[in-house]
Image 1 (cartoon, one colour):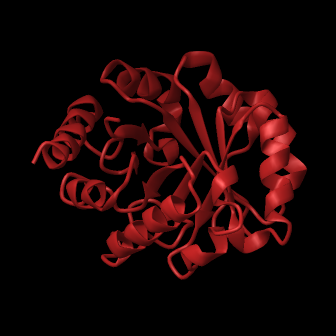
Image 2: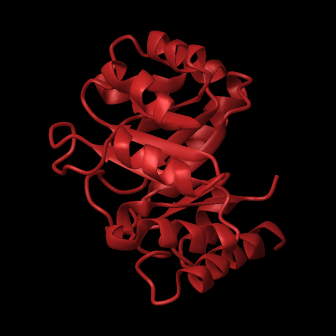
Image 3: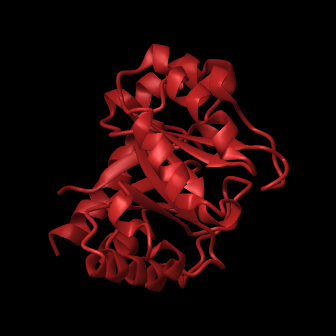
Amino acid sequence: MSVRIAPSILSADFTRLGEEVRIVENAGADLIHLDVMDGHFVPNLTMGPAVVAAVRKVTSLPLDVHLMITDPDRYLEAFVQAGASMISVHVEVLPHLHRTIGAIHELGCRAGVAINPATSPIFLEEVGADLDHVLVMSVNPGFGGQSFIARSESKVRAVRGLLERTRSRALIEIDGGIDVHTAGRVVAAGVDILVAGAAVFGQPDPAAALRALRAAAIAQQTA
């Protein structure tokens, strides 16, 4: 499977969000990534279901919703109704993770689990076979434009090994500091989906930036 690119609208210009989304869609984006932050689990506030619904109106691409919030169970239905295609929840806040994954699936959505840089992949072992994707955070979540944590590559390899042991077909997604310099490295480690915010929307020409990111990933795949 070719690597997928998921531009993160956290770095987009919200005064022209529809246009920004259409630009990256026309440039070949595979997904649109939306970071939901509550100011509690992470030190920032971003968007809610209304923004997801607005993005749903301007694109046919799958919407990849990352819930960086303390109580995701309360809001699953609202985000699915708003148009989410994939939902990622954090292992760090869910004592009943298996139940939450099941609830996401029951709502007709693909379910993923996100893990922070300090969280061991071992916490995924009992739910690996139930997942559609694992989101590896390669920065500490909360703000866009942070620098990639180098040891994230070994983290991806550890997640890949765990998924293979649990016979899971889940994809590996990575978010944080992904650009033309890090894309090839994480793809080599086993990543399937690249989330990129500043490396796409933070550039003068987001379409060209997205194509360059894909080229960097493909170069690694064909090396």
